[in-house]
Picture (cartoon, rainbow, N blue to C red):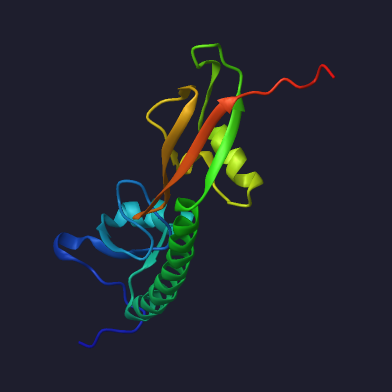
Length: 168
């Protein structure tokens, strides 16, 4: 008996094969074919729009979609790589209140570094900055950045004492 174009594919043990249309925690990522119990597919994945039946037609559409996504991801990765190279040649200066020994009264964290990079036209989020802890002393720091999966960079951060020239 010939399989029809719209017939749902079944795996071993009577499980249904479904094509995930979104990332589903503990199950798989968008575009993956997974085997699930028929009730889970019927009652949750399909009605919520998390999956579609893994028919030959849908598999072809998903393959085309995956190729387009791969091209977009590669283009975005190239942009991040270029940004990483620019950041390695860049340094920022942050002013902070400190005592005579160079200890800051507060600290400099990822959000202050991200704000300073933003003022210099670098679109960096605080989540991309990898600090081992807040910066609590004056000096030069090399701060690691993770721009995307597999694209890392560094930026030089100068923490200098705040100037108080407001008495004139």
